[in-house]
Amino acid sequence: MMGAGRVVFAAIMLLILGTLNVIYGIGALGDASVYVNETRFIFSDLHTYGWILIILGVVQLTGGFSLMAGNAYGRVIGIIGGSLGAIFYLIGVGGSNPFWSLALFFLAVWIVWGIIIYGSEEDAV
Image (cartoon, rainbow, N blue to C red):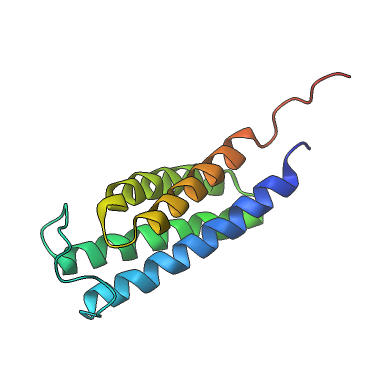
């Protein structure tokens, strides 16, 4: 099947993004100094931001594990988790690390593209 390696790569990257989001969410809940004092949040405060990151990370982790198992549920949750992650990273571009947010945005878009293109017809040569 075309794109099997790409979807495994997308699943691994989804697992990495989910892990990073959970770690950053725990850091936001624990009032870590990872986030700059003058950072403005779209959401109400740092704790809300942390919970949103943890929930997004858990969705991405379940999608990644299910995608590795080859389930259709993994494709759906992977696309949803990757899309929500891309939107969330794009919102965070104006923060203290804009290039890191942009890199995560493009990685999330790559993951969604890799999952969507999986199993498409091969071109006849």
